Image (cartoon, rainbow, N blue to C red; front, side, top):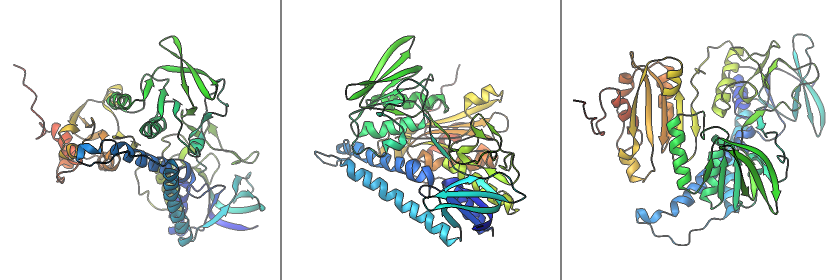
Length: 473
C-alpha cells in the first residue's frame, strides 16, 4: 500500500485544488490526483485562457476606435501567435501558483488517472494509473472532483474534423475567416465576441427563442443588439439538423421558422454545454447513484456511498468554477467538523462579453413565476459618468426587491466591470439586506459602482441622476 490519507481528491480543478488546500489547512492528511495539468479545465482550457483572449481581442477592437479619445494610431494589426503566447503565459503563471500552494500546504500531488475502487471495509481505495504503472492509495474519505468535458449534440456530421469544441479552438494556430457556432449560451457569445473582434465572420445558431436564455430577458435582448451591431449574425429558435463538408469549409443545415436554411463557415464550434467527466472515474461496481448523467449528493455533498463526496460539474446545479471551489471548501470544512464558511445558495453568474454581464438571485420574471410580489429599480448606465468617460455601449443595472419588505432578492447587470461588482449584490442577497441597508454605504465618484446606488435609489423614491417620471393627472 503506497499511501494512506484522511482525504483523497480526484481532480485538481478549481473545486479539487481548493478542497485539497483547505483540508490540509484544517489538519487533514490530503492527496490530490490529477491526470492532466493542475488547475483543470478552468485554468488550462476554459475560464482563464478564454478571458485572456477576450481581453486581447477587446484591446484590438478598442484600438480601431482610439481616435474617439484623441489617440492616433494607423494600421493597427494583431499577431495571433503572440495572443496565444500571452494566453499560455497567463495560464502557466496561475498553474505554477497553484502547484506552489499545494506544495506549501503539504498536499501530496499524485499524477495519473484516479479510479474509485469498490468498497473494501471502512477505508476507501483509489487506484492511480499512469505511464509509470498503477498504485493504490487508501483514505478515510474520497472527494470526486473530475469536472466536465465539452458536450456534442447527436446530429449527422458532428464528428467531422472541422466540427470542434472549445478544447480544439484553443489549439488553432490561426483564427478562422468564418465560423458557425452551434449554441447561444455563455461559451458561445464569449467566443463570438473574441473572433468577431479579430475579423472573423461569425454566425450563432441557438435552439431557444433567445441567446443566453437562462439570463434576464432584457440582458438577452440588449446583448443580441450589440452583437449584431458588431457584425455577428444571430439566429434563434434555430434547430440544427446536420453538419456537412462544403469544399474546404462546412455547412450547417438548420430549421428556423419552419424553413430549412444553411450557414457556412471554415469551422463549426459546438458550444451547447458540458457534461460530467466520469472517464475512468469508477471501477466496476464502485459507482455511486447517478441521475441524468450527474452524481447525486446530499446537502453535505456526500454520495450514496458513505464517505465518498462529489462536487462541481459532476453534480447538478451551476457549472461554474467559483461554485465548485465553494463546494470543495464546504466539504473540507465538513470533514474537519467546522461550520460552513460560505453560503452556497446564491451563485453569481457572469458573462465576459463587452459589456460584461452578471447576475445573482432571481429575476423579475422568475419572481412572477413563483408568485413573489416584487418591484424593480433600474438605472441606465449611459447616465453614469465613468461610462461616458470610457464610451461604453448600452447597459443597465437592475435590482429586484420584495415589494413589502424591500429585501433584495436579485440583481442583473450589463455594464463595464459588472463581473467585479456583482459580489456586492451576492453579499446583500445572502445576508437578506434591504435596499436602505445597502444604500448606507457611500460609493466613490466617478465609478461604474455608482450605478448600483442609482438603481437602489429608484426603489427608494427616485435616483438623483434620473429624470423623474411624469405623474399621471
